[in-house]
Image 1 (cartoon, rainbow over the protein chains, first blue to last red):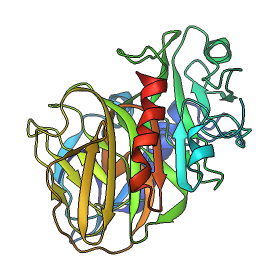
Image 2: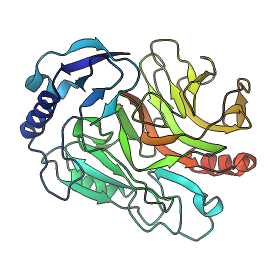
Image 3: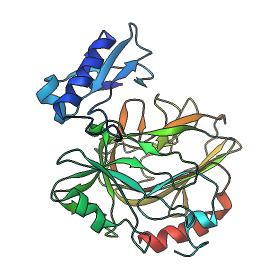
Image 4: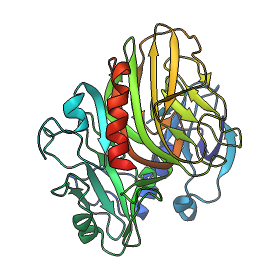
Length: 79
Length: 263
C-alpha cells in the first residue's frame, strides 16, 4: 500500500515528530481529555527493515514539512 | 423516551452501537464527546428530550469555530467506546459554527476526512454477525469507507474502495470478497452484512446485493471504527451498529426503524 506521509527509520524519531505536532497545537490541554496527540504514528511491521511513519495531514505540513510517498507492506500497527 | 420503542430495546444484543440519536432507553449517557477547535477543550454532548443530538448544547460549546468528535460512546451497554486520541483523525460535527447535516434528511452527521477511531475493547466476531451502518458516500471516486476493522489490514467487515473502482468489499478474516462496483453508488445508503455458514450477504435498503460468495469462516478480533491499518475513512457517518449474533431474520424491523428515523 502506498502511503503519503513521513517515514522514520528509528522509532524515537517518530515519537519526537508526534510530540512536536502535539506541542505545536498545545495538546493535551487537560489530563482528562481524550485528545492527547495531534497525529498518531505507525509501525510497518511487515516491511524489512521495519520502519515507523506518520500519515500526512495538511495540518502538520508546517511542522513536519513536505511529505513523501512510500510503500507499506501488509499490516501496520498503531503505536 | 419510552422503553421498548428504540432500536436496541427491540434488539438489545449489539456488540457496539454508535449513533447521533438515542438507540436504547437504558442508555443514560451522552452519544459523543466533542473537541472544539478554538482551545481544544472537550465536552460531552447530550441528547435532547426527543432523543436527538442536542445541537443547541453542541453549538453553545463550540461557538463559531469547528467541533470534532473525539469519542463515540457505546450505547450497547458494553462500554466499548470508539475514541480518537489524535486530533487530526477526528470527524467533524460542527463547521464554523454550523452543525454538519445530511443533505437528504437534514439530521446531524459526522464528516470524516481521513479519520479513524480505536475501540476501547477488542470485539471478537463469532460464527455469524450482522452489521448495520447508516452512512453516506458522497463521492465514489474519492471516498474510502471502512466500518469496523482492525489496526492491521485484516480483518475488516465492510469497506468501499476509491480510485474509481468503487468496489465494495466484505471481509471477516484474512481475505476479502468483492461485491463489485454497482452495489453502492453515491448518496445515502443503508447497509447490512451477515456472514454465516461460509456465505456472505450484503443488503442495501433490505434488498440483497450481489451473490453469496463462499469464504472461510473464522472468528476475528476487531478493534477499529473507520479504518483498516493505515487506511482511514473519508465520508459521513450517522450511525454504526454491530450485532454479534444472528439478527438476519429481524432485518425488516430494523430497516423500518432506520427508514422511520432517517428518511
